[in-house]
Length: 234
Picture (cartoon, rainbow, N blue to C red):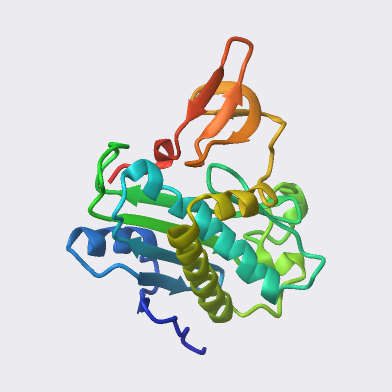
């Protein structure tokens, strides 16, 4: 298996077997590793990876790295997969391929204070490559990458492409602010205009604000659910 090659400003650290790249990345970040570290696990059944950030802005702005990483993934798979393969992103980190759930993004930081500048932030994803069972018809809302006509997409190449495209969008965000990211996100977002349940609330998913907080309208009011509500406990 070819080992992935990462762009400048990024470095790779491979883990194997049952090691979770997200948890390893959070641990390395807490010990003070450099930003740009990509921890990854190239298993036979799945691709898992996580990227370490050292934000220089408050958490409410830094959380934009979650949708940025999602956009980077969509761009990467879009460049490698057949043109008929559709990739969309759920607000809570879910990945959809051809309309079915196919992995997810997750995020963690050393703080949950939205007005604090975090010491570190980690965004990771996990992507099933092959279906878990022999009969995927039992779970039609769940899929795997190679079950969707993407068997020629090698996991190391996808990981490399994700790193490159994500770095491109980080640069655009740093130079041009949130508007280009928002514009790209709107074309990929799944479920806008539909009824959803999130954060103990139910209502219509109207879209996002400039910091990608979910705007959810119920019978009484329009609620803003910040992206930081998706942070996992560390």
